[in-house]
Each structure stands twice: as C-alpha cells, then as structure tokens.
Length: 122
Length: 183
Image: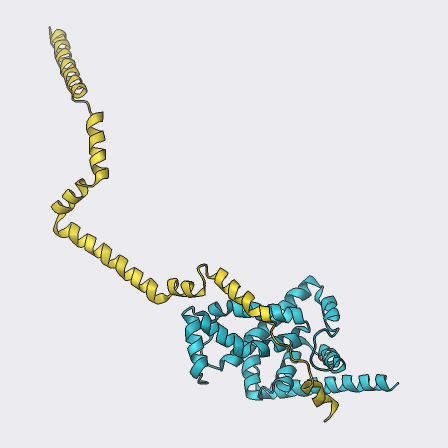
C-alpha cells in the first residue's frame, strides 16, 4: 500500500461524543418552546387549518344569526350582565327631576322671549 | 430523482411532523460521517462538533428544504459543507482561525497512530477548505463521483480535475515530509 492510500485508510475517524445528542435534544426542545413533539403538534399545518375552519364557522354562524333573528340577538345581548349593568348606571345618571327642571327652564326662556318680543312691538 | 425509502423516509416524515424519533434516527445514521467531514474541512475537532450540533438543532426547520432530489446523506453532506465554509468565512473575517487551527493540528484523541493522524491533518491543510472536503469524501468516505457532483454542484469532469490536482499536492507534501524524515 502506498503512502497516499495509507494516509486516508489509517486516518482517524471521530465519533460523536456521548453528550452531543443530549445537547441537541435539549436545544431542539428550547427552540420549539413546549418540546419538539408539542411544537410539532401546535405548529402543524393540519391544526392551524382546523383552527381557521372553527373560527370561520363561528363567524358565519354569528352572521347568519344576526341576519335571520335580529330580535333574538337583541334579547340575548340585552340579557348580558355587562349590558344590564350599563343600563342601570345610565338610569342613575339621568335624573328625571333634573330633566324636568331643564324642561321648565326651556319653557321660561320661551315665555320671556315672547314677552320681550311683545314689549318691542308695544 | 433518488428514491428514499424505509426507515429513512419514515424518519423524514416524523421530523417534518415535529417528532424527535426521526431526528434521533437521522443523527444515529449520519452524525459520525458528518462529524468527520466537518473535521476535515475545519481541521478542528471542537469546531466540527459545534457544526454537527448546529446542523441537527436546525434540521427540524431546514428539512423543509429537502425535496428528495438526492439521498438524505448527500443533502446532509452538502448542508454540512456549506455550514463549515460559512464558519470559516466568519472566522476569516475575525482573522483568528488560523491560530486556532494550528493548535488543533496537534493530536489529541485516541484511534489511528499519532504520526499518521497528524500527517493527514497537515497534508490536508495544504489544500483549500472546499478541496479538503472533496478529497476527504472521495478518499476517506468512498463517496462516488456522481454523488460528489450533487454535493458540490459541479460537473463530474471539473471534480475529476480538481481531485487530481489535490492528490498531486498531497503526494508532493508526503514526499517532502519523507525526504525530511530521511535527513
């Protein structure tokens, strides 16, 4: 065997150190967040497509409901606790007496305007 | 198109679905060959291990680029080759790798005789990184010319002439070393 061939045939061949796979495994887990299997599941195109379909069906259903039965939707919306609370708050803020006073004031102003106009004429 | 079959195909599918079993199978099958290829390009055991680690960590993402036009092994050799050249380029930019390599050429691990191992490292060091990669895969791993053509994206004729020139340089180096030893 010549020197050239022996150079390659007797060459040292490295073996991956025992800890190398562990390091790769842990880094793959870190890169994918919840581990490689979890990431694969969460990030799979099939799951993303399924989520998109569920969202589209939900929006379509809401749209149909609004189109076909707006009264029921209104009732359903008005029965929401948040809406009820808002309504209660609204009635407290608008004081009926204040509204009455404001209305009287308007009348008084109207009356005085009429008197002024009469005086001017006289 | 090269057909890839059996456990290799299954592993690729598992890897594409995010399964660690597929990655483990590919690691077990190819990591040693890739490690040695990187070692011969970078002339550094530590840096070769870094590249192998980097390659397998990125593999779940970059496997999408593997279209099965060559065997997985050929594709991995190509990816490893490119990663090593990138690393050399980065190190060259930092202008410090030459000194690190000079230290790495000193034999450390067990296996082949120290003299032979050291001589191979020195002999390959007379070649540029890409030619080192070609020559190692041809002579050290027995990769056929057709596959080398896929790895380096070069016509077989070009590869033959580059390999021939590389052999001449290595032989020349060996003769010079032998003359020095006889003195």
